[in-house]
Image (cartoon, rainbow, N blue to C red; front, side, top):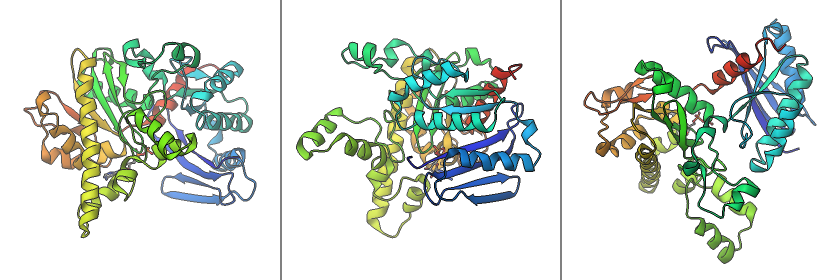
Amino acid sequence: MAVSSFKFALIDSATGHQILHGLAEKLGDDDASITIKRENEKNRLELGKNNQHVDAIKVLVSTLQELGLDNNIGAIGHRVVHGGEMFTQSAVIDDDVITAIEAVSALAPLHNPANLIGIKAAQLAFPGIPQVAVFDTAFHQTMPEKAYMYAIDKDHYKEKGIRRYGFHGTSHFFVAQKAAEWLNKSFETTSVITVHLGNGCSVCAISDGKSVDTSMGMTPLEGLMMGTRSGDIDPGVIMYLMKRYKYDANQIDDFLNKQSGMLGLSQLSNDCRTLEDALNDADNEKRLAAQLTLEVYSYRVAKYIAGYTCALTHLDAVVFTGGIGENSNYIRDIVVKHLGLLGLTIDDCKNQQARFGQAGAINDPTSRTPVLVIPTNEEWVIAQDAAKLTKGVK
Ligand code: ADP
């Protein structure tokens, strides 16, 4: 079995409070472990040799039992990466849903099979507790054809499902809803551009509460530059590498998904914080590499934001979220300064203060449109959907 990991959280779906959370990592490897955090306590347990997903879940179940929390679980929500065109919203998991997730696995061969392993292990460990699949792609199923079609032979769409799907749907939905609350508007009349900048990065145009365009495509590789992913690149580069340098499909995959982005361009790190630190490095070469990387990164974010104004009839706010969007005043500053022609202006002081989970506006009062920083909470969306869909199911 390939080495994998999963995150988990026990959440009060009404408030979003995380009662317990943690991470099982290196599953399938000899040094696999599970870390469970609760309030100020943190316990890490080795899972031993020949471990599987289900072993990590068994540890989790017994911990919940010891803490007397097992009776509190009303439903289990699973994040599933690809729902293809079949899932426009979350779904209570039954045999048909599992078959449908298997059917779209070809579009996400690394993620969907791993998600299914998690689902099956959880079904074994929590018999009788309803389970719900929440898809990264579902929120974007409202995109119009003009946004989701690639300009390629249409049979490839009809026969092979090649089209743009988009990801990070739960995050874009969550922060857009919070933005509507902040703006004191109903979600159904709110139009925003949400910018999720984490290890993976994407931008979404939301018109009257509906996703109408997003930067990731058939896979999460399209669009913005990311920690280790290239984002948009001339497909001609791929042909060139294959023909001239004999790269095979796996090498191309590794090159564009794991060796590119911030890591590839800087040759320093995939981590934005490390690159920001390197801006002050005594080594001139490192400083310049970090500066160029962060400039390319921010310029591309700004281009997508400007581009997505085409998808909207009005713009109520631009919203930053994700580890970088929530914390890096450096990146936000460069991005917003590229958007002067759209009338966006930033307040330096507010921008510097908006970090570490604080929500708020960072624009100057003269800005034509509010610029907001809103921490994302994908786990809460999953918990809310799981609770909503399973009311009365058990
Ligand atoms: P994931 O997409 O895996 O959930 P996150 O949303 O946590 O990842 O984002 C991780 C990114 O956020 C990393 O590049 C990290 O350097 C960046 N980040 C976190 N805190 C800061 C900070 N204070 N300043 C700049 N970047 C930060």
